[in-house]
Length: 225
Image: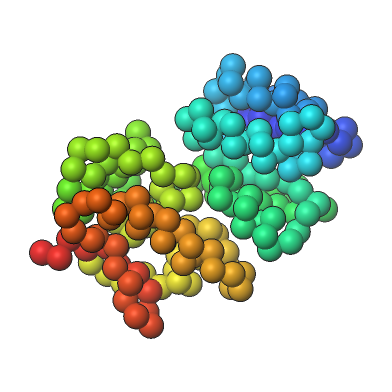
C-alpha cells in the first residue's frame, strides 16, 4: 500500500509515518499543500491523508483541485477543527474526516475502511442501470440517455447507493451511515441538500423523474416500470 501524507506538523507527521511503515506501507510525505499537490499529480497512491490547515495551499483547496482534475484516490482529512459545518464541507470531497488529537490505531482503521471493497453482493457489477441512467463504478462516470453528467464524489456515492437499492426505499439514516459514514444525526439538511442537487442533475431536462421522495420514509430510485 502506498500512501501520501500531507502534514506540516513534523511531530504528527513522524508519528504517522512511523506507524504506517511498521505495517509495511510505503508513505511519502509533503510538508505543505503545494508540495502535496505536486506529489499527488506526479505519482499514484492508494490513499491520501491530508491536514486541513496547511501553509500556502490549504488541505481543502488541495483536494478540491485534485478532484477537479479527476483524481479519485480515497482521502481522509486530519484537522483540529471539529465543527459540524467543517465536517460536512470536508466530507463533500473527502472520504473521511478525523479530528486531532487521534490514536494511530483509529487512523489506520479508517484508512483500511476507505480501501475496503464493497459488499460481495455488488462487486460483480461494474455498472448499475435504471432506465436510461447508467453509473459505471470502475470509470466513475454517470450518463443519462448517453449524455455525460458531472457529479461530485459525494453525489456519486449517493447515486450509487440509491441504484444499488433500486425499487426500494432508503431512509435518511441509511444514507447518513452508508454515504457519509455518520453514526449520528448531524442535525443538518445535508441529505436533503445533496438529494436535491443530484435530482437536478439526473432528472432535470429528461423525460421522466427517476429519484422519488417517499414521504415520511426516505428516497427511492425507480424507472416506474
